[in-house]
Image 1 (cartoon, rainbow, N blue to C red):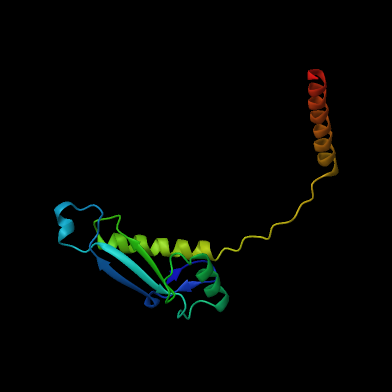
Image 2: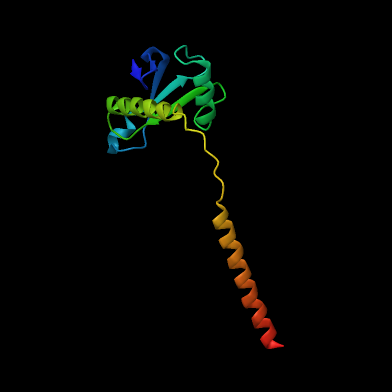
Length: 138
């Protein structure tokens, strides 16, 4: 199980991994091994997620999800497939955790009357200053 937050954990059977050639570290060894790991998670078909969670994930992570509703995360930071797999799982959990956080609604605030009056007073002073300059020139 992959634990996302207190209410959500996703079974590993819902996630698939593929490996491919990495562009990361490895020297000549890089040409022989497939150390990049790509994690695939189908958001739409996942039984672990509620409809509300699916909609939220699809909206917030729309740039990372393809047309079929599959979330794709790649990791190629290490020479080891195992380390890249662990890194991809950590990033997957972090991305989903951040996507499911609900931000509180913004409370509208009113501009205080004193601030409005101060601004108008400054405008009057600036106007008078400019008026005085133009009268001297004539």
